Amino acid sequence: MQKIPLSLAQPGMKLAKPITKANGMPIIAAGVELSESLISKLDGMGIDKVFIVGDAVAASQNPTERVTRLDHLFRRLGDDPFMAQVKRHLREYFTIKAAADAAAGEKG
Amino acid sequence: MEEDLKTSAKGQILSIRDLPTLPKVLDEVSRLVQNPNTSIEAIAKVIARDQVLSAKVLKMVNSPVYGFPGRISSIQHSLVLLGFNVIRGVIISTSVFDIMSSTMVGLWEHSVGCALATGLVARQAKLKDPEEYSVCGLLHDLGKVVAAVQLPELHKAVGEAVRTQDLRWFEAEKAVLGFGHDRINAWLADHWHLPPTIKEAMSSHHHPERAQRYPQHAAAAHVGDFIVRVFEYGNGGDDQAVPLSPQALKILGISLSDLDVVLDGFAENLSEVSGVTFGPEDAVPGKG
Image (cartoon, rainbow over all chains, first blue to last red; front, side, top):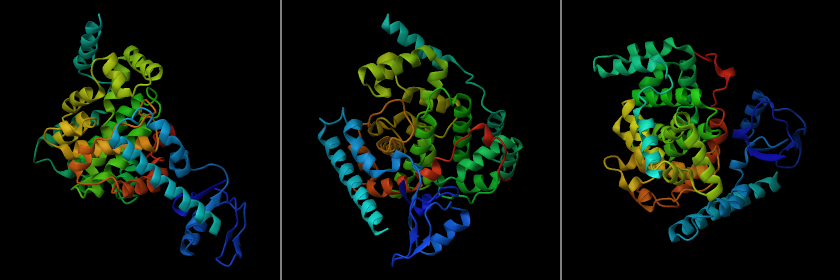
């Protein structure tokens, strides 16, 4: 299961969790396959994140994954003070992104 | 011995005048644009004659990389909006990668990702004509593909050095060949009469501070390459970050925190951009 922004949703993806209103009332059940018209309806309702089945969006975009890869990517650049600063900056950036994603996930 | 190898490798690449056949259209179009009286309609007509090529160009220019997603309906329209240099860069890259796609797996994705990132960097730095910067990103590693085809044995040796000595591809090239794809890029740019802006980006993206005339183009491609590697989208030949030049940020007039907007834009658009591939199923023109 993966939570993705609605902008990345494609027809054919399946919902892993129901889509609910702010008050928790389900609008669309889990297991429903997304269609073009359904996606634009969701967009109209102000839904900006959906949970989908599988791992449709590549690891490249997953901020948690990015944080864990930084040490590997920068393994030969650690001695350079500027690159150390760049790495710290990226770590902070992706950590905040990951936390924001997690928070949005809890809210549903 | 080693010096001999370097000299002959260089000769082999630089002496080859005919790269694996690019579409005839490109020659014809290049001839046309040398005449300042040639109209956009005339150029568009020549490109549009090759339907497969046209379909690929349209698919490419309609991706979010160029800032007009899904809105360019014809070759003529694309020439008006993006200019001939951009369209020519797109034709060259798609043609070269089409012929050589299997030589370096992941390099096409790396290049398209770099095009996206470089364009975003140019927008963030408020540079004029960001589409031209996107093409700089698209073409920044073309020399790697060409070297792979022209010098298969040495290409293998470069890959071996990357794996066994934990080198970045560029370092391994210099160790094995005595020069990097930046040099090959400069030659290719001359060979295809690419504009000096794109040539400078292709030849100086590893050292933008050494760029002579167009440091902004080189710096944007440099930062674009850095970003696509941070996201590990595609594969430029090794799995390491490249040293980011502080000078590049200075040249662009942006700070490290300004890159956050670029990172945001990259993550948002990546999946759409990743649809820009040219498998055999794409050989039918989608729209006219």
